[in-house]
Structures are given as C-alpha cells and as structure tokens.
Length: 500
Ligand SMILES: NC(=O)C1=CN([C@@H]2O[C@H](COP(=O)(O)OP(=O)(O)OC[C@H]3O[C@@H](n4cnc5c(N)ncnc54)[C@H](O)[C@@H]3O)[C@@H](O)[C@H]2O)[C@H](O)CC1
Ligand SMILES: [K+]
Image 1: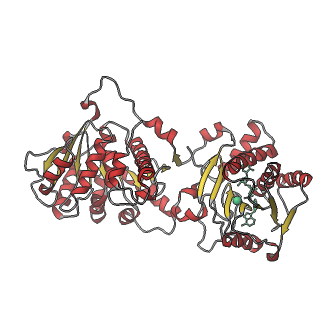
Image 2: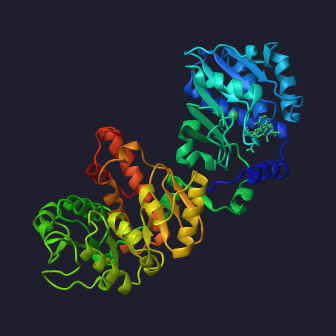
Image 3: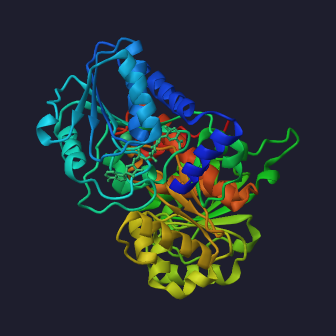
C-alpha cells in the first residue's frame, strides 16, 4: 500500500470528486460515516462525547460526525474552536446541516470557553487535519493543551491536530496526544516514525473509496506493507520440487559465549524453507549446534573462540553456496575481520549482513563499497548510526537511509517499530507487523536466518527483505498472543513462523 504526501492527498481528494464524480460535501459525509462506523464499534452510546472542531475540512468532518452520532443517540457536546474569521465551504455546509438538528453548538474563542473534560468521557479531535501549515498557537494551542491534560479517551479524526503529515514538527509544537487515530484511506508518513508515537496512538485506516486509479499512478518512494502485499510475494511450492530447489545457505554465526545466536539464526533459516543449511561456528560451538539443530550441517572453524573462515573439516568455499548470512554473535576479532574482508572480495551474490558484521563494516568503511549489489543489511538504529551519521529527526534519518541504500546499492532494513526497508532505487517500505515484545535478545538473529533462507530460495532480494521482515513481525505477533509481549522469547518467534 502506498503512502502519499499532503499535496498528493489533496489532489486525490479532487481527483475523486471529479472522476467518480461526487460532490465534495458527499465525500465529507462518506468520511464522517466511515469514522462513525468505527467509533460505534468501539464506544457505547452511553459515553459522553465531546467533539472539538476547527474551521477547515477537518472541522467539517467533525460537524458531520457530530450529526451522525446524534442520530445514533450518542450524548454529544459540540465545540467549535473559532480561531480565525473564515470557515471552509464544506464546514459551513455541515454547520448549517447540524443547526437543523441541534441548537447545541458552543464556540471556543477564549480560554474560559474551554470545557472541563472528565475521565469517563470521550474526546473527538477534529480541530486540524492534513491542512496544518504552521505550529498551533493561541486558542487552538490552549484547547489542545486542555485536551492533553484531561483524563478522557481521545480519538483523532484523520490525524492528531498539530501533527504534520509528512514533515518534522518542532520539539516545542503543541500537538494532540490521542489514544486512537482514525485516518482516511491511506497511512500517513508521520504515523510510522518513532518520535511521533504519542501523537498517533493506535491508528487505523478507514476506506472512503478515494480514486483508485489516482493512487495506482501516484509516484511515491514510501510504501506500507500489509498482509495482502506480503502474501503476493510468497512463492508457491511446486509439487515436484526437492530440497535442491530451495538452495543451500551458509551461515557464519557465533563466537564463544554467543553460540545461542548461531542456534537461533540456524533454526529460523530452517523454519523459513531453506533447502539445505550449513552453519560455520567457532570450534567451541560444534557440539552445541549439532545437538540443538540436527537439521543443519556444521562446519567447525579451526579457531575455538571466534570465526576465521578456516575450517577444521574441509575448506569451505562460500561461493559454492546459494547465499551467505553473516553476523549474529560473531564479535569483532581481527581474525573475523580478515574473514569478512575475504568474503567480500570473493563473493558476488547478494548476502545478508547483520550485527557485528555491520559493526566491522562501520569500523572499516572502505569495505562498504565491496558489498555485493542487493545485499541485505539489517542494522538497528544504533548500528545504522555507526555506519552513517547522527540525525536530528526521523525525516532526516529517512533521507540518510535512502542515500545510503542508493550509494552502496544495497537493501537496508532499519529495525524498530515499523522497520524501514530502503532499496537501491530509493524506495522505503515500512513494515506493519511486530510489537514491543520483539525488543528482546536474539530476535535480530532470527531475522538474519529468515532473510538468508529467502535469498537461498531465489527470492528477489527486495522482495525477500519485505516479506521476511513482515513474516518475522507476524511471528512476533503470534508469539505475543501466546506468551504475552513480556514473556515471549526469540525462540518463541522461531516457533511461531508460518509461511501460508
Ligand atoms: N483528502 C481526503 O482524503 C479527505 C479529507 N478530508 C478532511 O479534510 C482535512 C483537510 O482539510 P483542510 O481544510 O485542507 O485542512 P484542515 O482542516 O487541516 O485545516 C484548515 C485550515 O486551517 C489553517 N491552518 C493550518 N495550520 C493552522 C494552525 N496551526 N492553526 C490554525 N489554522 C491553521 C489552514 O488554512 C488550513 O487550510 C483532512 O484532514 C480530512 O479530515 C475530507 O473531509 C474527506 C476527504
Ligand atoms: K484532527
């Protein structure tokens, strides 16, 4: 699913009005109805609901929502924040319609007009929407502050008032802190950026049938991966396939004290459909790995503690494998750096690079140029910062991320809530699955195993990254359902992987 910018959202509105065709006021009615349907599913008509409306179209939505909720017999109190002399046409239209059914519209011009809000009430925020063009001030700001101070449940219409849709807010900006945001048709870029968490709350998209062809043709670098997008990427298995059809992966993982990382990556790789798996671990990991993961072949490194790439058993030529995953638990020993350097010198196929392999790259940045094209790097924000530079805000981080992926022609999975996957063409795919339970040791090793398995099976590397990250998050969501987000472990994530 695409994420469009504010100008495109406005044009989409117009395109819908022209092509459907539909009168603007009816489109607003459709949006209000979609909101009210969601609202009525979540809150009983016994709860006092205060609606705060601005003077633009977001406020117009609010007035229409108020009328529709009155029809459903919700006890509604309607407040219009009168911060400017002019209202939008559709606001005025809805104001007239509302006046036909109630006299009870109050106006907030000064602070003392702001009502007290109690804890068992609901607030609907329809003050400002995607038309925000400057920081909130005056009575708008005071109203937002009062709503944020109140103990009530807050639901934002389309986007929290004061939050920019696709540009950074200043730290001093006053913005609604909603429990829920119900947004129209498309996700907004602001919703997937970590610093905005408290200005978004739980967010959901409601469909208002905006012009589909406009959306299909609109150029954008930003995508949001939902279940139906991920499902389209999944390869079907041929009845006559054999283990040779799904590749032979090689994992370079583990060091003394971190063989668990090797076990987790190997198990995840096997649970993600790889045909054959060989795992190279330091000598000390041989018995552990053979016992914990009998399905994998094991190449013990001649070094007992760290990986050097030299094996006790036979010399392994990484080029003979379909793909390679490297990093989980490997440490940063000089011998391991030599191994990584040699690997990058000889390998031309896309590989998966994680954890300490990334830290070795940041300490030896001349190696970045040597990464095979379309390799997948999986840093968390700290690792990515070490590879690049510090950023001032999430938008700048996205720019740095895109530039990095383009410059080195690699795919970067920046891990976190809504993991951002940057491609060499400059696109970013935000992931929709996952939960805070994934913030526990070993889940990154699991992701490396998954991605390595997908590359081994011949997935296009961008598709492997998008699908792998989605499935990893989904497994995390299943593990959280079973164990709860606090009790779940990386092993639970492996056990929760499913590919159907
Ligand atoms: N595109 C859609 O899918 C649909 C959107 N709808 C709703 O319309 C709003 C956007 O409406 P718009 O009138 O463009 O903007 P706002 O209501 O957000 O703002 C009104 C107006 O206020 C001025 N303004 C900007 N910043 C400030 C500020 N800080 N303080 C005071 N005033 C400010 C500026 O002039 C704005 O134009 C969208 O969010 C949806 O809720 C449709 O109803 C359905 C289709
Ligand atoms: K709003």
